[in-house]
Length: 123
Image (cartoon, rainbow, N blue to C red; front, side, top):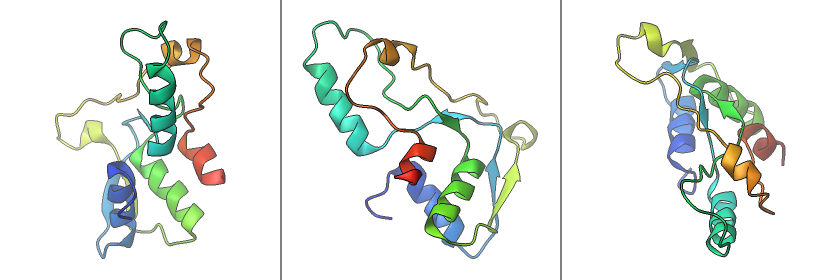
């Protein structure tokens, strides 16, 4: 888990802990993994036509509960610590949609594909 990024460390800790943890189903977010991210950054740095803000994330949106279920299935571990919840009913003041547009990234036609969690866990 040390080499995992922040989001994956959070999920791995939630799955391996002794307590149930509520993971929101209504906060979609896009992910990227460091090797895909690094390759894409190098590719963009070498291009003169890439300007402005580029969201270097996969175009697959997921939420923390779904991420926990997929990760547990991939690892062959128990996912019963993860319970679904909703941010909108939690009393927390948080943005609900954390997803990012990848339209500009897709228009750059990079050789590097920033894989989403489903594709990443399938490889």
